[in-house]
Length: 142
Image (cartoon, rainbow, N blue to C red):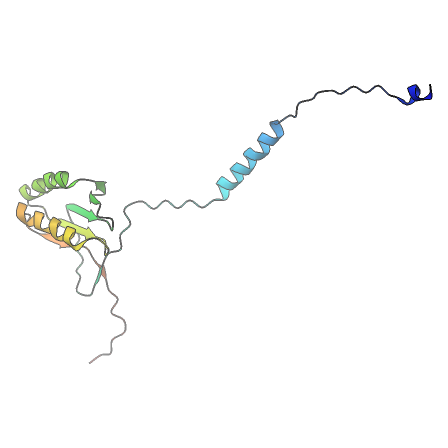
C-alpha cells in the first residue's frame, strides 16, 4: 500500500495558446519594414535620349509624342495607340502646332520614321526630335 500514497492524481488541463501577442509582434515588424523601406516613385516616362552636339533648346512645344524603348507610344505622357495618335496629330495639323518627338535610344528606328512620316503626311509644320546635349569637353582655343 505504499504505492498508493506516491501515486498522485494529475489532471491534464487543455489550454489554448493566445495568439494575440504573436499577431501584434508580426504587425509591428510589418510596420517597421514598411517604414524603413525605400520606395522610389519616379513620375513620368523613363527615356534614354540620344546625345547630339548640334542640338538646340526648343522653348515651347504643343504636342509631345514619346516613344519608349519597348515601342510604347505616349502623347503628352498619356498612353495612346497609333490610331488615337493619328487623330490628335490631325488636330495639331489643323491648328498649325508643332510636335516634339521624344524617342528612347533603344526604340526602333523604323517606328520613329513611321511617326515622323505620319506627321509629315498629315501636314504638321514642324517636327522636332528631343536629344540631350553632348558635353563637348575641354577644347583648346585656336
